[in-house]
Length: 163
Image 1 (cartoon, rainbow, N blue to C red):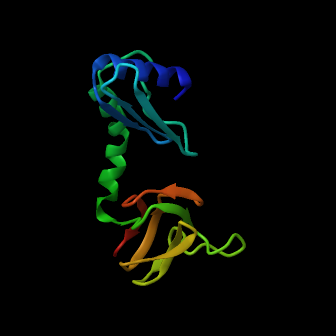
Image 2: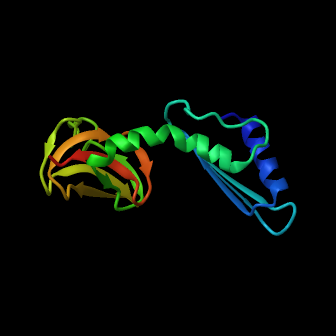
């Protein structure tokens, strides 16, 4: 998503009269809030290192439900395949680390068998390093977060096959 697309989106939201609009793609999260004053606008843009978005964002103003449908459609297929897996989510906000230190091996790798109580990762929050332990036993199928990435509360971190 380039600057021109973002500017068009801001103009569209301002003209539509909506008070808040959120848009998420694989690598961009945008929240646009308009206040009661005509000139007051707040735009929050977060870009995370990731692949190029799979869903195109309309350059010209278009109804927002269409854009939301296009963004959600590519995710429907993987979600169906992942339904048999258990998702381990972040219990806190912070920075996700797969290793205890840069020169040590990762806590968890794809294909590794884990048991309840095994440390899967570390999340740094306010200079405190919190070890995140597994609450389930199984095999790690997918790691959903890149090392040293910020994570939100309840954000999926790992997919585990319990069988």
